[in-house]
Length: 619
Image (cartoon, rainbow, N blue to C red; front, side):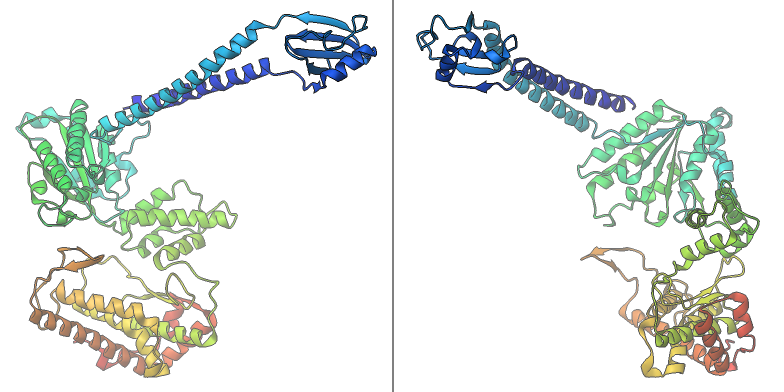
């Protein structure tokens, strides 16, 4: 695999040397035969007249060319040139025999003329030969690329000095335990074969983006100390049918030569989607590639000691033949890290970053529920960037907090200046969210309220759960709906029905999505309780995603009614809370206008007298 990379620099060097020699030869010939100085040319009549007057010291004749040295330059080289008439001597053209000028006749040089004639023939030939050689090498390179079109593009790892091990991957302890068995299979295959156990053919790593699937696959190879072939699913598929299948055959052939080893296919859903579903455009090349993968993983050849690791976050779209036992025998789920795992991941990413004593990673881990390992790495990197931007060599807790808020809710837009009316409107809008969320018993606590524009919003009310949640009840969903509508209701209560603005657009969209998810995906509607209408099989048509609805028009009408009921109920509850606690709303809005950003403790203090009215309670 390294030979092509080594040949290319040598070919480039040879080409450079070849053309350099050609250019240098041309410059040398030009310097050899070009005149050393630009001599002044004078008429032959003037030369004869001056020679007869004693003003010329020497005349050198070579053929019809004259080199003239005036008397004032006696003893020096010629300073002028002239040309006599062909077929006659200089005396016949008027030079007196008794002239003081020394006349020297030289035979014309035949070497220069012959060499120039030879160069006139050879140089065009050499130039044409150089062009043909260059074109031939280019064509040969393209031919080599064409011959390697069906070769696998997998990258081979395993000889690195610093290998990725399980200790390098923070969190995911359950996944490590499952993968530890794969390491044992690779390190001690005979131990399992002696008791009749078969080495698993494939392990599918399933989890959200950024949870460390690729790093875990590298850790398996590092722990087992075996070669590791890495390739993306999209690298198999080309526009020509058969190329992907050829690359699969080449990849497995290389893996068998290096057995025991691991093949890692990242984003396998790019090539492993369900056949005949129309997803992916019904591409024959993709299906041929998938067929070849199926054959290679469970063909007639046994005992190859090659394990295939694959990663995806869309296991639901994979072909059933790919997931059956004998191909991907195991499925390892890698979920979002829990609080303890998040703290370990943060410690790993801050390990080589200088921090002061104010940085509390355990507190940051508590606030980052739902964040992936990639999100946590991004927070650590942003904190370091903020410290460097402020010309500090140590990261402080303020840097960490600012980095977390920038990633979670967007960066502050301090350059955007709102007028007083917009500022007051935003203050009441965010105060409405905070008030409703604070009063409702099953809502998450308010973490921060600000009217400084962040991201794509004019202000932010930020709720954070006190602990990791794995389930959400109907009551909790309804409290989320009510606090989402709190901003629009606060605008209506304070400024009137006709003064509501577009500021609540994203809130209303989010509330409608939550209500529809409750009815369709979670079976939480009143009329359609315990019935789920999963809408997942879809495709692209005219640049839009279309779905085939698994329910009738009558059911669709009932679903729309259920969604409308949930949204209307949430609006009524939010309005009841705001009317009952109008003074608290005014106090919080006034504080926001003055302070612009209010933290959790201050919010609790300002809303300490707010109460839940009976008409907003759920029974």
